[in-house]
Length: 420
Image (cartoon, rainbow, N blue to C red):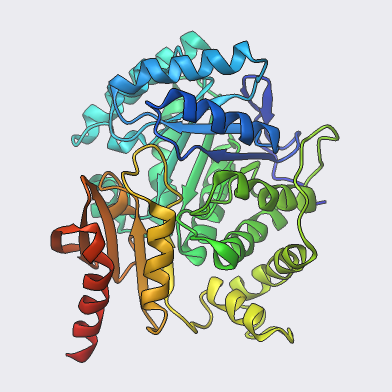
C-alpha cells in the first residue's frame, strides 16, 4: 500500500475523497441521458459491480429533467451512489444541474470564449455550489485547453497544470474547497508529467485538492487496460491520485474490475465494496503493466524481461518506448455519442492494423472529439445523422461521409498520404 500525497478531503454525497480515505473507483454511463430507463438500468449495474461514483453527460438544458428523474429513481430504489453531471461548454447547464446531483464536472475555461467572462461565470457557479453544498471536478484534458492558455504556454503538460491552477486559485479565493482536479491525456507520458506538475504547484500553494486520475480515450481490450495501468499505477505509486477511472471503449461495467485492481494494489480497500473477479490472465496482464509502467515511463529501463513478446510489445507501446502497431485513441462513449462507437472502433482497428508509426483517433462526437485527439495523425469523428468527418491532424479533410463508407475512406486517406 502506497502512502497518498496529503490532500484536503472532498465529500460527494456519502463518499469521501482524499488522502485519508480509500481510492475511489468511478465510471461513466454511455447511454443517452434522455433515455431515462436505459440510464437508470445502467446505473443499477454499475453500482452493483462497485462503481462508487457514476458520471452522466448532460449535453443541454433539455436533459436536466431527465437527470433529475434518474437521480430520483435511483434514490427511491435505495441506490445511494452519488451522480456526477458531466458538462461541456455551457455555464447555464452547469448552473442548472447544481440542485440535482452531488457533483459537477466542468472545464471552466470553456464556459465562454472570452476568458474574463469565463472567470465571471465560474465565480457565479461556485457560489451556487456553495449554496447547495456540492462538489465539483475541474477537469482539463490535453487538446481541449482554452485558446487563452495555449497562446501563453502552448499545448504542453505545463500548460495543462497552469491552466488548472488558475481555477484552483479562484476556488481558494472564494473559500470553496469541495474540489477535485483532473488533467487527463491519451498520451501516457503527457498525462503523468501533467499530474506531477499540478501536484507540485498545489503543494507550493499550500492547498492540495484530491486528484482524479485517468488516461482519457485509452481504447479497448488489452491495449486500453495496459495503457491505463502503466500511467495510473505510476502516479499512484508516487502517492498521486485519490479517485480513478479506467476509460475503455467498452461496456462501462468492464472498467470497474481494472480500477478495483489498481485501488487494492495502491490503497486501503473498503471491506464491503462490491468487486468483480479477474481471470488469471487478466491479473497477470495488469500486474505486468503496473510492475513495468513506472520504470519505463521514468526511463529507468529501456526493455523489460518478459517472455511473452505480445505483452512486452503492448507495455512498451503504452509507455511510448516502442511502437509495433498503430497507436489508437478512442473515447469510451457517452450520451453524446450518436453511433455504435464500440463496433466502429473494432472495424477501424481491423482495417488499419497493417499500418505502423501512425496514431488514429476514433471519437464519439464533434463536441470535444477534435480537441481531445490532440496526438492523432488521423481522426474519425461522428457527426450524427449517420455521417462522419475524417481528420488529418487537426484539419477536417473529408466531411459528411456516410458511416458505411467512412472506414474505407480512412484507409484510403492514410494509404494516399503514405504514397506521397
